Amino acid sequence: MTAAILLWAVTAAQAMLVAAMACSAYRLIRGPRAQDRVLCLDATYVSAMLLILTIGIRTGSAIYFEAALIIAVLGFVSSVALAKFLMRGEVIE
Image (cartoon, rainbow, N blue to C red; front, side):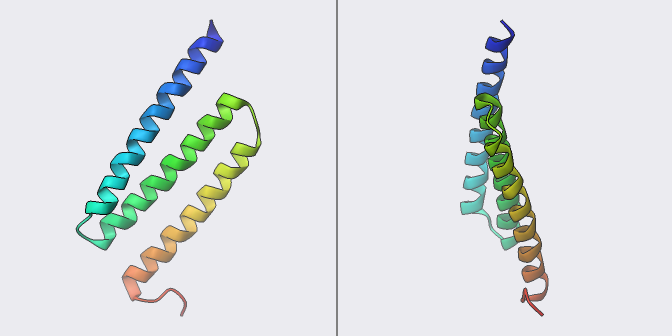
């Protein structure tokens, strides 16, 4: 019974994460300013990372956890680069 509850909970979490990614994609397209779009990209990569983690929980494979770690690191670096670009107009000094 606990396996069925875990499967149901992971499926519900995946559905909610897909809905969050859809809302974020809508805001990415309709965002009036560049800052809104950067914030949506942050929300999208966090949702994608969590979606991959839930897939890893569902399958029991460790490769998904490593992929989520890579997405987190690359998402953080890209957020910093975009913020620096919006502040100064250049990424590399």
